[in-house]
Length: 334
Ligand code: ARG
Ligand code: ZN
Ligand code: CA
Image: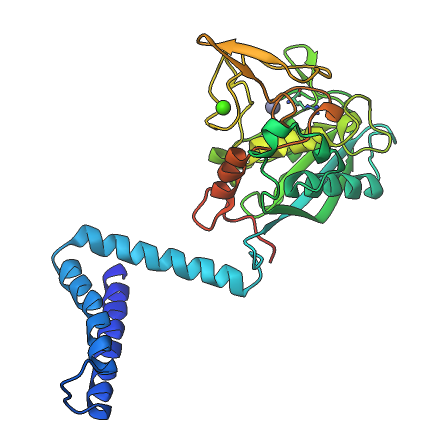
């Protein structure tokens, strides 16, 4: 099948080349000067050299076929409006609400508010972006070209007061709500309360290697979702920004180890997580090098009001997973 497709592509290129040559020769009879026909022949040589190389190299043929398929996929997404002209990907979101109390049954308005926060933070138009220190403005992501659109909200009453990180909220058989097509939608589960190892947590997310699995998505405890009625100091919707960051392949900025690596070069290596509202500048020393750390990054653990940026390196990781060849390329509006 692949061979057939390849043959068809090669044939169409060769025939196009030949017929163009013929018509050019007919229009331009032999001429001593450098004619446009000659120019065209020189241009066409690349194609001939390519065909020679392809003939004798199966690996090269495979790369060619893959490349054409990816190019076609991208062009199609542009044409269908699944990717906006500036490369922006709009991720469709399904919110699954599991509530015991009316307070936990977060309103549509609050869900809309949360989507607004995600859009502002991921496009860099959040009002507090003005607080980014000058030294980090040069490496600020600005617009990551990822946006979010709510497409459905599913609500279910439950008698459960607290949930664990064992993914029960994502299973109807365990009293939760099954994910809606996780290859194509970002599923967010809201529960009343969540604990991990006996401690209350704000939320947790799956990384892109889980793309499309039944448990793929983000879980957030109701008090930390949205803004209106949420619990200070986590009442600016930044738990979702942080968790969706993980979902789009961002690691904690301290690399989950002492002076760990978050796989992003423009986020300065820092000793550990930061909490509360640190005062800028904050210096950490790792391997004998002292650095001013980017604690105001969404992937640190500071309060919602103290985090207001992604870095350019983080933007590259996010774009890589939502690209037409990335692990989360299925996240498209249909
Ligand atoms: N996974 C982290 C937790 O559960 C979320 C931290 C989010 N930080 C924030 N300021 N909202 O603790
Ligand atoms: Zn985290
Ligand atoms: Ca780093």
